[in-house]
Image (cartoon, rainbow, N blue to C red):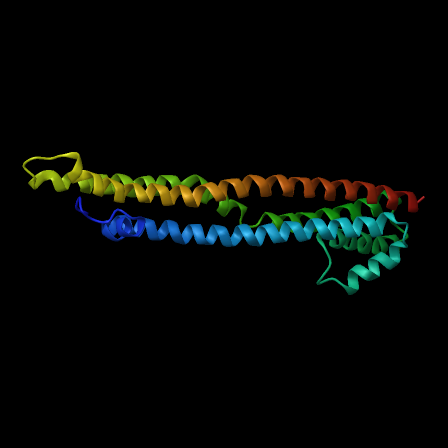
Length: 226
């Protein structure tokens, strides 16, 4: 336990903490670093998805030929956006089924819709990847920090067993050391919660745009079958 005259800076409090509390702090620091890594990765991924969705919607609704859009999507598959891949999957299935004379128009359109839905699910899984990690960090980190704090406070009071006259000055440094664990837990949790809520909202908006496009494109394909 730190003495009354010990430097009360954050670094000195961390250095003076018990082994278990240091382990909790190290775990929370590692989790915080990972959450910030995924926060930036997810922010760039969602921004890129929205930009490519905007670009493809402009190209699609500009009245261009569907075959040209499809060939462009096939040729630039690695750089294509999620909505472009959804379109590619639907139009590929549509052209394949349309060549089968035994199928009625409704079956052809339903096949294209199912192909788009399957690609849509894969794209959404990709966008939502690691959101559960941010949610877990936001919900669990404060309790992990609290565990370190409780353990540190227990050690601080146990250190009074051999002190004949206990005062607040004897336990204050130990309690301060323990409270650093809670502070680190909150430092890890708050950005993760804020990022999770923001990203979940943004992904929901993108998802709505994808679903709206699939319905509108299905209607276009249905009109082409008439």
